[in-house]
Image 1 (tube, one colour):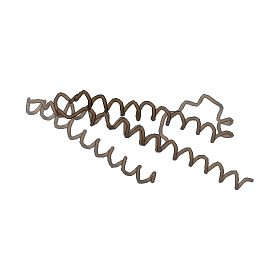
Image 2: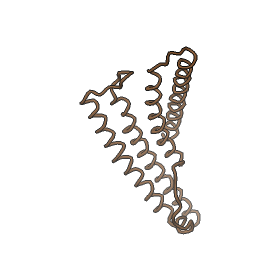
Image 3: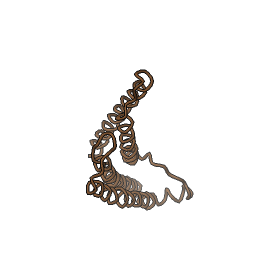
Image 4: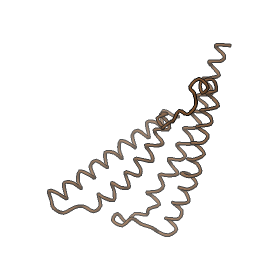
Length: 162
């Protein structure tokens, strides 16, 4: 399941980046060559940048590419790897669930309730912000998957050594 999700995210991220590239290129062309800047491309690029950043963070979590700061000696972390990685994954998942899923759903609900639309594209902003709870759920899934993977790896190593 993780590999399929990875492939889907890769495809979506490449698609978003390609649309962004076309949008920004058209913006530059229309502004400097045609002398008539397109207003739609500016807003579209901003929304796609939000999607790229948030979905990219979810993808980075699944690939173990998130930032880490080593505060504890490496030897103590290696001895208690399941505990420390579980601790990290728990708080990443907690943050993603509380802020991105719950907060994102609330944000979407409010923007739909107040019928907020974007200025140029005139689409409901709830659709733009919907990426927050989706990415939060993906991050939670990756955290659970990676914790189980670490736990199984440690258990299989201890069985071979024991």
